[in-house]
Image (tube, rainbow, N blue to C red; front, top):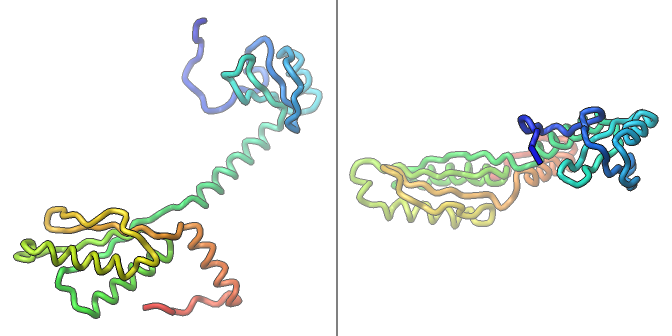
Length: 202
């Protein structure tokens, strides 16, 4: 059988655009009507003031459902938007360290990593080697290992330390998903009666 299809459309065919002799019809509440001619299906749709929408084009015969297509499209768009909003929009934050970082600086940088992980973000930790430091990669490895150990309750090493030119890079992923972190933050805020969170952690 010749394939008369033009460019593939993501939109389902509706009403008069469904050009087959018969369809398997599903009612507006999901009830099975059975196989009916396209003429009868369109007539039923018209009488119910609904659209006939092809929901399974590859079935034999195609499956069509009676529905309010405008409302269906709107609800689908809203669901897709909600799903996008809830999926982890994981942002990769970057922290740069020197192999011979002083203790105070290390604590500050570690504080940033903790904050990012708590918010559900990944952290790319870059050790920058300068001059002769490049011949001492073990300093970088040790520092990255120490940082990973210090934040292991909040994150895990997603990408192990590897040398990249003059830098050494490691990626730490959060144990908590972005959506969970947001929900927890909102719940904590509501519990405090809408107060801004106090800085509990450096």
